[in-house]
Amino acid sequence: MTQSHFRRVVLKLSGEALAGRQGYGIDPAVVDLIALQIKEVVAMGIELAVVVGGGNIWRGTAGSAQGMDRATADYMGMLATVINSMALQDALEKHGVDTRVQTAIEMKEIAEPYIRRRAIRHLEKGRVVIFAAGTGNPYFSTDTTAALRAAEIEADVMLKATKEEGVYDSDPRKNPDARKFDELQYLDLLNKGLRVMDSTATSLCMDNDIPIIVFDLGVYGNIRRAVMGESIGTFVRGGGQANGREGDSE
Image (cartoon, rainbow, N blue to C red):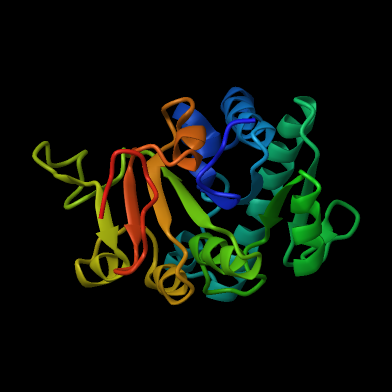
C-alpha cells in the first residue's frame, strides 16, 4: 500500500464541479470521474470524507439577492447539497466504494443524520462519508461546513477542489499576469482578501491548525497527488506548521 502524507482528509467539492461544462445540474460522466479518483485514494488506505456544495442547483445568496427570505433560500441550498451527495454516493457505490451520506437536517428515509462518532467509525471501516445539508443552519457556507467537519472528525487536511490551479493574487481568467502562490498562511487569505473561501471557514481552519490544499479538480489524479503531498496547487498553513509536501522545505 502506498504511504500517504495524510491519514484522514476532508475533500470539499463545489456543486459546479458536478455540473461539468454545462454549468448547471449534474453531469453523470463528470461525477463518475470524481468517483474514480476518490476510489483510488480510498484504495490507498486513506480515510476520506466529502462535503459537496449545491451551487449547480441552487444558491441561497442568489435567491436572497432576488428578494427571497435569506433563511428560506439557504435551506433550499442545503437540500441541493443532498441531491448532489446522493448522486456522488451512487457513482461511488457503482465502483464498489462503501459510502454513507450524513445530513445535518434529518431525512432518515434517504440518509443518516450527522453523528460525529458514527462518521468517524465509518471512516475507520474504510467507508467514504459524504456530509450533506451544510451545517443545518442558514447563513453558513459549505466551505464553513467542510472546515467544521474537518475539525470535528480531526482530519489532517482539508482539500479544496477548484477550477483553478491554486490561489492567485488576482483572477487568472481576467488577468493573464496573475501570480499563483505555492504557499500561504491563513492570515494571508484574510488580510489580502484572497477569495478562496469565506472568512469563517478560514478562521476555523486557522484556530484548529488544519492545513488547506487548494488545487485544480480538472486535472485527473490531482486528488491523489494532493493526498500524497505532491507540490500541486497552493498549500495554506499556520506559521508553525510543516507543510509535509514533496520538494518543499522550511
